[in-house]
Length: 226
Image 1 (cartoon, one colour):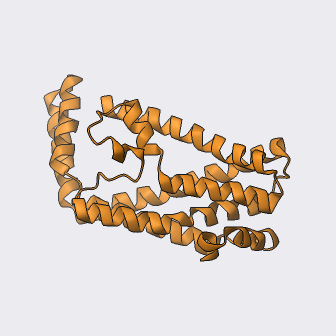
Image 2 (cartoon, rainbow, N blue to C red):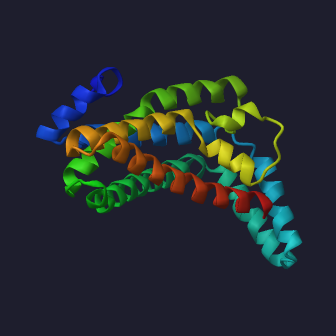
């Protein structure tokens, strides 16, 4: 699997002949879950609680509901099973859905760019390219430990630490160096495995990334203003 980092062309050439995805998928999912659990230990729960209460008060939520919400949050914060189990399980589900989404979108779009659909090979490309999660988790994990905070980024937002919450900050956060690396690998996979021409392979790979980051940035902006 080291070839995906050191000689990705050779790695994808092997996938063309024999698509393999199970081990990379397991590694990616486990690393994402591990990071989620580790980061949850450095979440400022009181800050999260205050923000949730402020939002409820702004919406004029009845005090009875506010009291129930406070009780529920206190139980969540004091329960190791909830604090660590929920992030792990939710990350597992979201990661799996995200990988499947990418594979389906690329596979459906492939004929438009000169390739022939083959979900198994596309799935193997996405899973193997996602092994970028290994160095990404290492770097982000170190940042969490150094900052003692779950709020870390390897996106361009790191260059604008004072930027207020909004679309621009969400966009810069999504423009992540490791995501760029992953989609670069996907483009190479499209070229090697499916024979898609260079320009079309990179256009397809990064067009999907652009759509994804715009959608996530809009969601992030909305979450920040609630």
